[in-house]
Amino acid sequence: MKTLNTDTAAARAPSRERLNTLDTLDVIPTGAALGAEIRGLDLSRPVPEDVKEALRKAWADHMVLLFRGQHIDDEQLLATSRIFGPPHEAAARKYYLDVGAKIDNAHTLSRHPSVSIIANVDEHGNPVRENSGLGSLEVVWHSDNSYVEVPPAGSMLYSLEVPVNGGGDTSFNNQYLAYEELPEEIKRAIEGKYQVHDATRNSAGVLRPGVKLPTRPEEVPGPKHPLVRVHPVTGRRALYLGRRRVWPSNYIIGLPNDESEALLDKLWAHATQPKYAWTHIWRVGEIVLWDNRCCMHYRTEIDPTQRRIMHRTTIKGEPVVAPW
Ligand code: OGA
Ligand code: MN
Image (cartoon, rainbow, N blue to C red):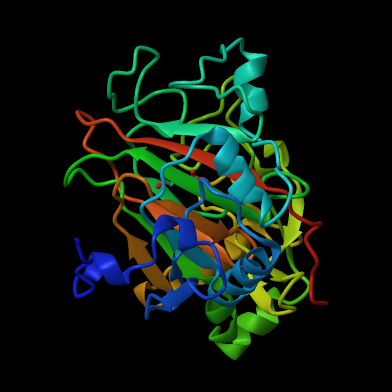
């Protein structure tokens, strides 16, 4: 009779059937200012309620969660995203539909309104430097969709194809810590202040389809949000900067232009220090979930000769609450 060799790592690891329990769930902090890897989950299979609860707690504690080795379709990605909240329709989608972009499900517009295809390919699937989205471009520090009235709580990015040593590394930073460590005089300077969040350009700086570039601050379209927000789950304060573009773009309401620019420069220099950040280098089959209410993210440029295909969901948020 054959006996099992119990002395191998494979034999000790839980079988896939035994995953998705509180016993198999592991939360392993990155050791940086934010982020944790979650192990012991197969997201193509049902996740019980107690495990979902533990995942929501891990998200509140660590701001960014990484799940490796997943093989899922869009329905399963949406189901995973729903653990953390209902879907939010990506704000960029309407700009593409308005200019007649077609839904093709492979390279540009997904048939699910809350799944975005984040890919550096053209409509034939060939890798390119620029397309109507983020292309292969560097993506500046930002939090998603801050240019709408009620921005998404979180975003979840799933890697289907990634370049080999070809860039597209994604960093995240902890804006609770950035707020807490602000010099006192800057904390005082931003108290009670709101910013207009520019909706004209995407996070790679590309003007959205059908949108006119503003020439004066009064022409910058977008909602106003406080420079500091209170996280609805943790109750903690975080800096909420959105994104930074050359003037005229985001500006602080009630300050002369030069003072608004000078204060934003100081805030951005502080908030984007490497000590607040953690970087993820992607492999295929990984999901990263981030919290737009207390983190920003950044992506390095991608080798435009290699395909990088990601599917992203966004999670419905709450109105932005100021601490004052
Ligand atoms: C996004 C984004 C970063 C990346 O999808 O919101 O900023 O790594 N993507 O592609
Ligand atoms: Mn983004």
